[in-house]
Length: 29
Image 1: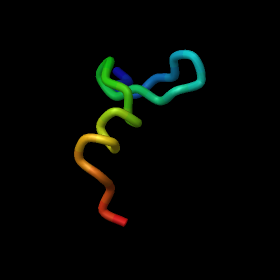
Image 2: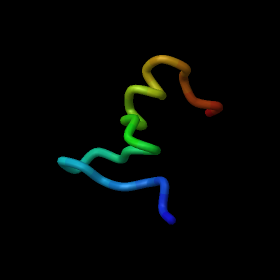
Image 3: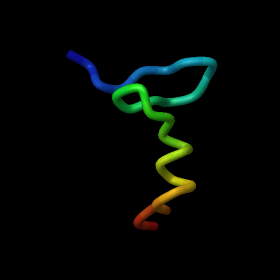
Image 4: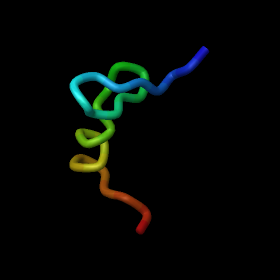
């Protein structure tokens, strides 16, 4: 089972946009 997929050229993790996660929580780098 893959929890990551692409929709409209955006990466999603369990149906949540990864860019939304980054905007809300930042990145470790």
